[in-house]
Figure 1: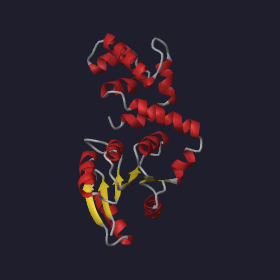
Figure 2: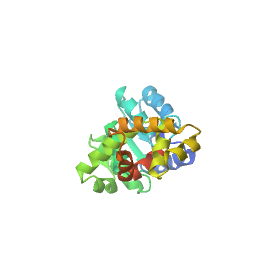
Figure 3: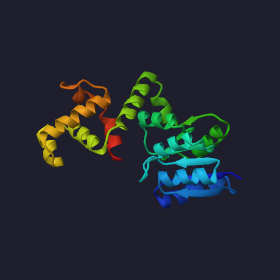
Figure 4: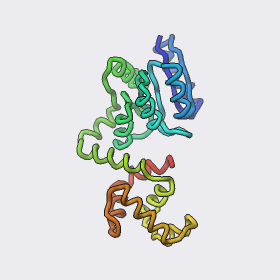
Length: 221
């Protein structure tokens, strides 16, 4: 009988997902977690066969939890079940060690298809995401930019989001109750972390090219 960990911060969703799985796998044993930190502890202590992780969870997100599970040698197959359709986020999840990436708004059958694939040692990705990553150059670029974003502090992300809205440094300073000089220092540090030249319009160009990725990332900060 499969041992399954479901990690999602919505109890009602966890209950619904359990019911769906039980309809096909009636003898399953379930473990639950409401955040990534709890999921990591359960994965290490209970050693489930399948680990289903949401990305957007408090305390620690699903991608960070996945990476730590991989680092600690957790043997359960990790599946990301999420609303995020962005290829950059998908890339981060797979690099963290996930075997499956399934969208929440897809059918239950797809989840069972994913179970079958990962149990047999193959990776699974929802068709919508697979269609996006046919352009591997673009996919790799988005994955790299997402990795760079994750190196930013919460304040740096806030400033980057304001830059994406064309706010000048003075207005950003007023909103954050800091000096304009501090904003410029933050902008320089952000450019360094993103691998951009300082003292040019490179940061503005970057946010235009990666606005969708930045907005998705900023929702969780």
